Amino acid sequence: MGKTGYDVAVLGLGAMGSAAAYHLAQRGQRVLALDRFHPPHEHGSSHGHTRAIRKAYFEDPAYVPLLHRAYESWRRLEKDSGRELLRQTGTLMLGSPESSVVAGSLQSAQEHGLAHQLLDGPELVRRFPQLLPGKDTVGLLEEIGGILAAEPCIEAHLELARRHGADLHFDEFVDSWRELPTRDGVEIVTGRGSYRADRLVLAAGAWNPEMLRVPETALTVSRQVLFWMKPSQNEERFRHPSFPVWVWAPEVGDIFYGFPMADGKGAGIKMGIHTPGELVSPESVDRTVGTADLRRLRCCYEGRLQWLEPEPLDACVCLYTNSPDGHFVVGTHPFLPSVTIASGFSGHGFKFSALMGEIIADLVTDGTSQHPIEIFAPARLGFSREEGAW
Image (cartoon, rainbow, N blue to C red; front, side):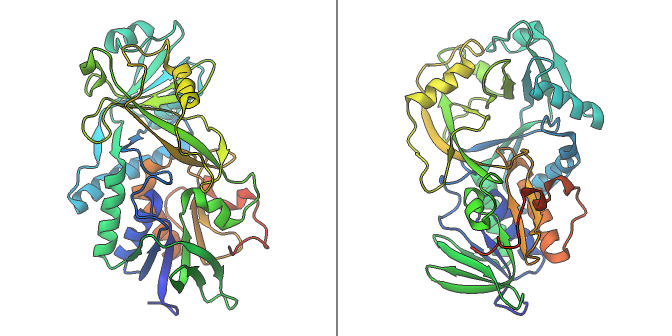
């Protein structure tokens, strides 16, 4: 234990915070972990039953070395927790050859020697008749891609964090935090009292922009709607192994995605729009899903997928915390050395969370990480010395 009550406090216990709490506790740190709700919950960015994982990364080839390690981290977490968390289904990236999704995925695959298949329109129809690709649509199929079980991943990290001695506080609202004047750590004030820790990890998802007090445009929160659709026929065509996870970039309109048919909890074909939606705050976001939300999704899939019932089985609202360049924001605060930031995951971060817990633990305990995270440097957000305590 350090000079204060805890070695490190973690604010937020979604995908990143739960992983950080585990890896810090595993390294012998005295961890205080706080969440205003009881995770896993449906108020932030880590719910919805499933998340995709893939290596042919259209966002940037720089992520691929991290993805190699992320796969290893997930398999290690499965072993340590005794849970099945990652199911390999393949991922299919769709669009024109010049689209960001296809061209970017192909670039990553070629630069890093990743196994993949490039399918033209007729081959797409032959293998996936539920798709209606246009004459210029191609698909990049990566068999190693798959699905992560979102809530069980968080539960596994929290269980292991507790097993290694982390002090988990759920349903505890954080009123404020500040670096102590003597730079001997931080103070966190909640509705139940105040705590001190040598270091602080801010992993509060959509609440991070407020907690960090960064410029208004540095981190934005968008409202994203998830739907679960039912096949009207040929249901087996929508199940794995007949259907993979897909991401589709139309020539005009939003990028959208979907998952194979599931049963039980999260039943149906999960679909959503990846393009950021309406800018909101986590406190005031409208969590009611309406006809306009469904209309926006239909504009994406009508004429591109067939055999779907018009009305969804279920729907919910999720939040993206977006950085201006779409890259993560992970590193030590530029002016507060006791604060580590994990934010701005821009709708594509969950798949990295098992590894990100290790990276955050590196930053807290060593001040650096051996993993290539230079593109995530928080300084690019434009912090000033006056911004900090919340």
